[in-house]
Amino acid sequence: MGEKGIIMTNSKIFNGTPHAINVVSGANFDPAIRKYIGGDVVVTIPSDGVLNAKIDTVELSPVGNIPAFGKTTTGFDPLPEGYDVYIVSVLYATAYKGSNPSDDRIYTVADPVMSDDGKTFRGCRGIAKF
Image 1 (cartoon, helix red, strand yellow):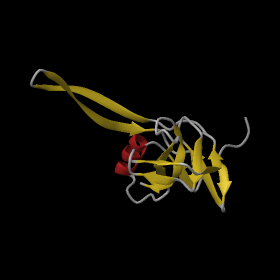
Image 2: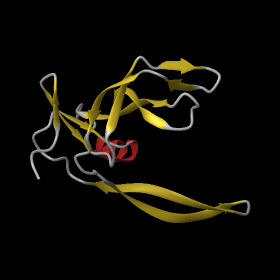
Image 3: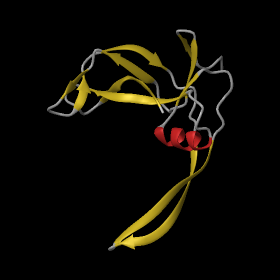
Image 4: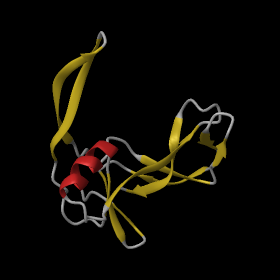
């Protein structure tokens, strides 16, 4: 299977999302569609496997005639060892940081970049510290 993770500028990165992450340079914000478009993919970070958070759902009292539910994170997969940076979903980051608030290795994707028509995801402008 080979070694997972990608090494960039002396940081070993683990992509814990279910998809490759395309980092796009030169994207511009289009206020007409309120999205980033354009630019070029400068690096692709392949998925190393999904890191999941565990969620419990409980039924709450309806709001009017609309069913309502509560969601609580109850756990998360452990981080694989040997990486400097972990790119994860917002859900995972929320669960993990709730138990590990001082861990500064957790990132999510930042600023999605769309196709010129604003309908298809092309990548993101970078990663965001959570």
